[in-house]
Length: 128
Image: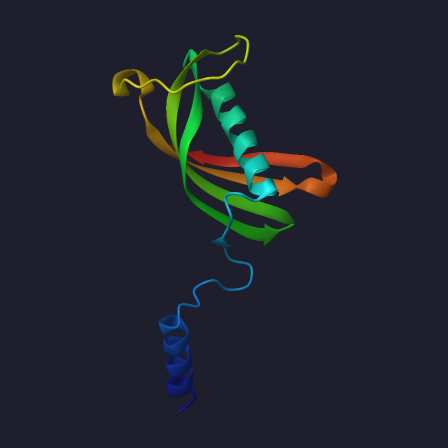
């Protein structure tokens, strides 16, 4: 009898769309200051790790998720493209190449762990 009730409750919870449980990822706001800080940090680190001569930048934020951990973990999916700015040059306004062959667009998901009270941020994972 217990299992039947538990199954019915679980089914009702799923039907109502309660898919995020305590400690899990929830949707985040792309305009949140902490999300923007995490995204900018991830892009800088991504550019440092890249062998490309040109800097990359986001062209669109696809999805933002966040998880409360010892701090906050952000999972940010973005569309990226190559800009006209070379690495190591003066950082002026960098426009994305209009020619798809030069822009070489792709999608990345960055996982960033942040502890703002400790001035700590770490790029945990990048999948492109």
